[in-house]
Length: 81
Image (cartoon, rainbow, N blue to C red; front, side, top):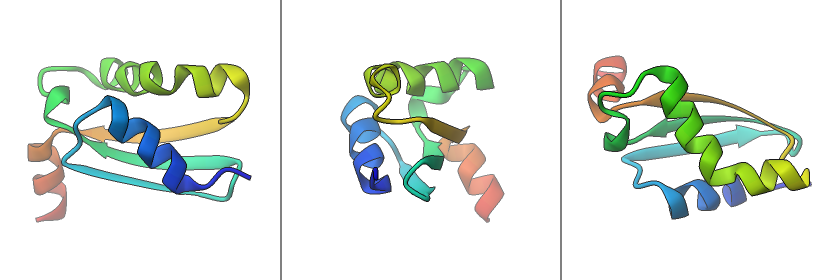
């Protein structure tokens, strides 16, 4: 079973994140990824950027499913006060 912390490490190695949180049951995972790099990108481009980082894990079947919220630091602050 895959540990959510491992997914966090993979994403953090490929993207500078202001906030990164992964939750999951070992098979299906949800991520909140907050990065300045997302500024000016639409939601699809943001998710493509994250999938680019973990593509080999998805292709190999090591990671099966990851849903995600991708936010800029400003959007994260607005959402969390």
